[in-house]
Image (cartoon, rainbow, N blue to C red; front, side, top):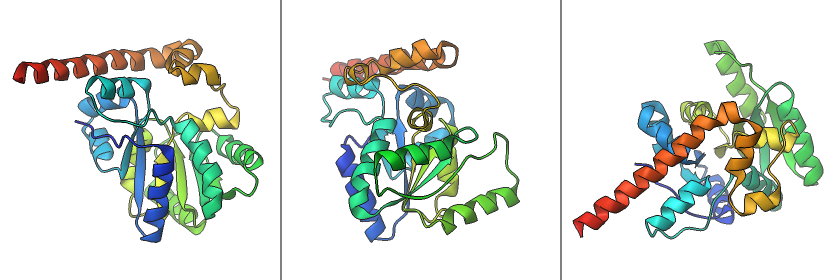
Amino acid sequence: MVHFDLIDTKTVLAAICGWKADRLRHYITLVNPHSVMLCKRDPEMNMAIQNAGLTLPDGIGIILGAKLLSMPHRGRIAGPEMMLKICDLGRKYQLRHYFYGGAEGVAEKLAASLGNQFPGLKVAGCYCPPFRALSQSEQDAEICMINAAQADIVWVGLGAPKQERWMMKHLGKIEATAMIGVGAAFDFHSGNKPWCPPAIRKVGFEWAYRLLCEPKRLWSRNIDSVRFLGMVSAQLAASAFKH
């Protein structure tokens, strides 16, 4: 069972600022139906989600499930959109941002793009890790590098479930107030991949656009969306049977 924090982005920003004031460290996961089903298959992913400071509803399927279960919500929080809003609104609080992830050069392009879009944005640093297992000495060097940057937020773009495992493993080691796993936001905002047009995002069909762009990689994730809604339907039926 995945517990969601059905809040809006301004509440997320307020939570981060509160953690900073209290000198707390947490990480934030954005979970879609595919990630929920991953939790059922992958104990480590499930543990990472359960230990998150906030678990946010990324995916129209999650909001549809909340509606079917009559749960109050504030709408979907998509990683790419949340990144823009927090970078924008966070300038008021002088938040420092670190960008960790993506293919070679993507994090640097992302930082430059966001800096141009939001004048005054404080970029603490960026790093694209190699696509291989790191030695312990390399992992220690990464932690020292990130901590030396004195970031408030570390944006993590490694994709699920790798980024959730990474954040859980580094909680207490990374000194930033919050780590936030946003996956494809690195590619979209760096210009590495096309972002779904706003009109399509607004009506909740971003999943269809992305499927058309990357059918081989994403078709199995969309099957998980069907499985998720089946699970919600079973929960509804069980509740109705009890009454």
